Image (cartoon, rainbow, N blue to C red; front, top):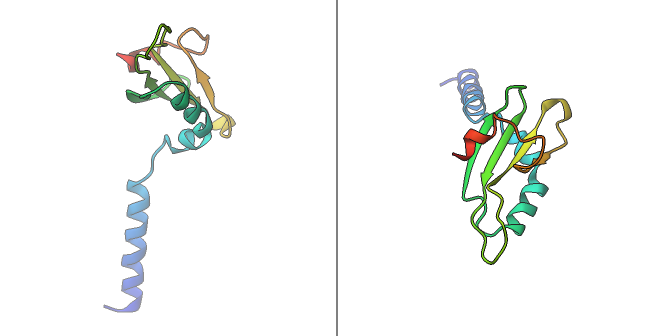
Amino acid sequence: MSSTRRGAVSLAGILLALACGDNPFEPLYQACADEMAKVRGDYVNTPNHEDRVTLSDGRRAVVWGIAIQPGPVTTPRGVAFIWSATSSASCTVCWPADSCWTDDILPALN
């Protein structure tokens, strides 16, 4: 195989790997890493499940179910980490009682 053909095959392989590995939620995980770590530290065995949702306004959300916590504390049902491309470096942490909790998020906890 010629070096030109090898280069083309190699480039095609790289492009295919990049296309298949594209994760539209990756920017959210990067922007929300600290907030996610805090929730993991505050609530043991969390998340007990995770769903990814694209909200009706185009923002992306990762919704975690929160495991029942030991002791006489009330455990929130879940938490949503919300990210928008318009403010890509910021992360909104949204709890069920917050105004940011929308009807788009609720089905992710069922």
